[in-house]
Each structure stands twice: as structure tokens, then as C-alpha cells.
Amino acid sequence: MNPDASLRPRARDLGVVVGPTPTGPLNALTDVPGVRVGHATVRTRPDVHSGVTAVVPDGVRPGAPVPAGVFVGNGYGKLIGSTQLAELGELETPVLLTSTLSAFRVADALVGWVLEQPECDGVLSLNPVVGECNDGYLSDIRSRPVREEHVRAALGGASAGPVPEGCVGAGTGTVALGFKAGIGTSSRTPEAADRRFTVGALVQANFGGTLRVLGRTLDGPGPASETGSCMIVVATDAPLDARQLTRVARRAVFALARTGAAYSHGSGDYAVAFTTTRPGTAPPLADADLSPLFEAVLDAVEEAVLNSLLAATTTTGHAGRTVPALPADRLPADRL
Image 1 (spheres, helix red, strand yellow):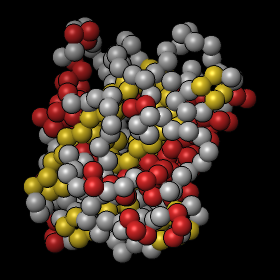
Image 2 (tube, one colour):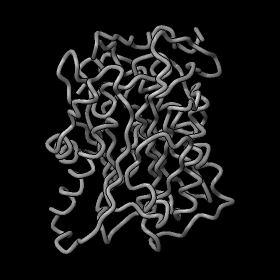
Image 3 (cartoon, rainbow, N blue to C red):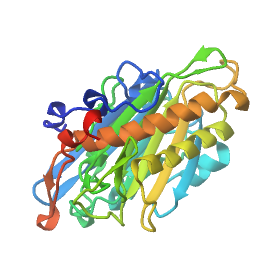
């Protein structure tokens, strides 16, 4: 947990409202029914600021996947499991986010956890999905501090309640747009084809550029984060197939441009999108009905990035480097 995050406002608390579509009750990824989020924070001051974040669709496992899509905006990253996800359009494990050099240990721990589940006694192959960002500016990344016990803690603690943001889990050591960043989340409840759905987004923000809020720029003193990345996870209860979810994931990466992302050479920009509605359980949406969902994704990702910055706190880390938090008093809508 980040004990200071509860004292800091979210974007809406400051009058910064992105788009017209209403949010869910928590304004979080967990507003999507059947989605849980858990964090394990790994911090040993001053040198280690890292962790792991788990996004857990209820009931997902080999043999019971959910439809999913993936989009690569810039492929300078290590999104483990992405090729099978793209090929089959199915997600069969939770999605875990972590630090670059810890991603491989996290994937191995996820495989072990899945194989132990009661329904997986006969499983001989599975496709773990693990994304990463490079937190090496503030954390001793070479120590690879995220281990199996942290993965299990994040998975075991995943809940459908409010999602802690900022310097927690996989966002503990991340930096974005010149300020300390971290985990951020938001949701929307768009109407499409005369039905109301929920769309939620969670970001692990660690990318370069110049922060833009409601069209105005704010310069930050932090590093350019050339070795950064941004991982985005989008969930919905809309009945979409894998091809449509890939289109949703594409909009999630597009949304980073609204916040000032530079999409630099060294930034791995990825989105994974999934639906909790299994095929055949609800009438599918036609492509012509997807525009409200696309808009909802754009707005939710933009607000999630802002929330990741606002919840984060000033951090001094490895090699004595300090990255300041975004001053909340710079963001009220009437001051932009």
C-alpha cells in the first residue's frame, strides 16, 4: 500500500473531468463485474522501489479463457505471452505487471500458481501473460527484487473493491511525463445498441513526453524516461470478440497521446483488452455499435494516467535520484 496516496486527490476531485460518459461507482477497473485487482509492493529504501500488480478475471484458466486482444504501439518491451494471445484471441491466465528484469520470474511464478488451481490438475501447457515497465531510474532493477511470494501475495489479495493507485505494486518505481507516476485506473459506463456496459482501464505509467491536461501542457522536472514503457489493461463486460477487442486495445494506446506521450524509441507501449462475457452468453455487438466503447476507452485511459500521477508521491531511490510528485495545486480545472 501507499499510505500517502489516500491523502492525495484524484483528477475528478480537482474538477478535471475527461469526457461526458459517466464512470462506474469506483471509477476503477474493478467496476467491470468479475474483475479483481491486487498489488504486492516491494520496497527497501533507498534502493528498491518495485512490485507486482495482478489483474484477475474471475474463473479464467486454461480451458476456460476469456476473449482478448492485444495491441503494440511500440514494441520495445517484454510482454510475455503476447504472441499466443494475438494468435488465438484468448486470455487464459491473470494479467500481471511488474519490473522489466523481474518479468521472467513473475511469469514462472504465475505458471506455478495456475498449475496449483483445482481445475488445472491435467494442464500440460499454458500461456502466462506478464507485462513490464523499466523502473531502473528509481529502483535497483538488477537485483530483480520481485519474487514468487510477491506474485502469490498480489494474486491472493486481488479484490473487486477500490484499487490503490500511485506508488503501489508494479507502479512503485515508475516515472511518467516528468513526474513520479505509478498505477492509475478509471472506468466508464457507455451505452451501445440500447444496452449499458462498463469499460475499465488500468495503467502502469512509465513513459516520456510533456504532460497535457485538458489540452494544456505542464512541464515536469523528472527524467525523459527513454527506458520506460506503458502497460494498459482494459476490461469490459460488453460481448466482443477477439478482433473487436484488438480494436479496443488499439484505442487504449492511442489515448496516451492525449496525455502528452512521446512514444519514444525506448518506450514499450502495449494494451491488453478482454471481456468478462463469454461467447454465446449475450447477443454480440456489431462493429457499427462500437464507437461509444471506443470513446469510453480513450477517456478512461486518459483519466487513469492522470490518476496515476496524482496518487504518486515524491520518491528518492537508487543512486540518490529523486523524482517529485505532480503538485496537485497545478491541476485544478480553473487554473489550467
